[in-house]
Image 1 (cartoon, one colour):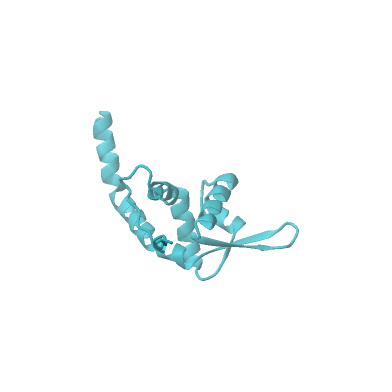
Image 2 (spheres, rainbow, N blue to C red; image 1 turned 90 degrees about the vertical axis):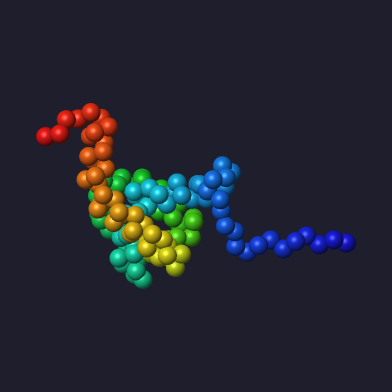
Amino acid sequence: MTSRPARPTTRRGDVFDPECPTRRLLDRIGTKWTSMAVKVLAEAAPGEVRFAELRRRIPGVSQKMLSVTLHSLVRDGLVARRVEPTVPPRVHYRLTDLGLSLDVPLAALRTWAEEHMARIDEANAISDGVPEI
């Protein structure tokens, strides 16, 4: 009788492999709504934030988009969800330890974007043939 090799407990992805699930993960965590939700939840950590408060603190997000974003984050184990059985139910969210670890790289990306947006706008204007004022 032959035994199968043990499956590794940790896997590392290869973003250049078209079949790698890392690509799907990057698609999910790379959205503006994910970045903003993680930021709001990280500011409250280790506390919780109710759905309505998250929506108020993320300008422009629709109820549906926030719900979809949070569902994805919960499914990925980045966010924990707690429901109080009231009428209407009160839903609370908090970052897990894994979610907290995502805040650092997302914060760096947000900072980079804020610091370089003017240069990106200039490059876009040049590319679009917009004359300088």
